[in-house]
Image (cartoon, rainbow, N blue to C red; front, side, top):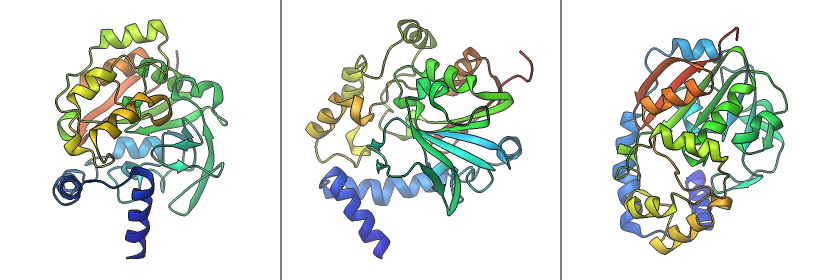
Length: 274
């Protein structure tokens, strides 16, 4: 009960009062449905081999997907692990007050702030045997630059595990999957995190009934207008085909790619020899 009260207080202080009907729909209808979908990955052997006892990095963690009761338990299986967020205060985690990355009672490694697109310049302990990221890459304006930066600090034979949302199960369900050519254009232009090219399209197709963070549409619009600080906007929409193209462009080979409940998961490996 104490934990529920603390969570409610945290929610109210960060997001404001949410209309009860919308909150109740998500809390008592959408989330239970998602929990039934989001079961542990079947046949996770290749994923377990990539992470167990090894040295890793998470982009945008910690993430429920990688917790002990999530779909792919990573934190209890990794040997050591650093974590990168885009700033020391984020929309998702609030204020990050420590430089140590501790999850589920384990001190795994260092926590640091950097854009995913330049993580190869900021990571404290490369090379990494694996890199994981859950529901983060869709918030990045230049995902190909981020994939390449992550690939650059993977050890030969190292693995990238990326988890991205299936549009059908979230507020993106009215949008189209991004074309790979568009990502190439953004990479060529070296688009930065202040880019708002997709703001109007995102706002037009955003299903606010599936987003309990916002008390009103005006609050939502204000948040994405200051996206450089909040990083709420999904700039691009992915499917498995697009993810395979992205990792290939970063010089990685797809080992496994699948739907996993409300998400897509891809496991890609860096060749042992270039």
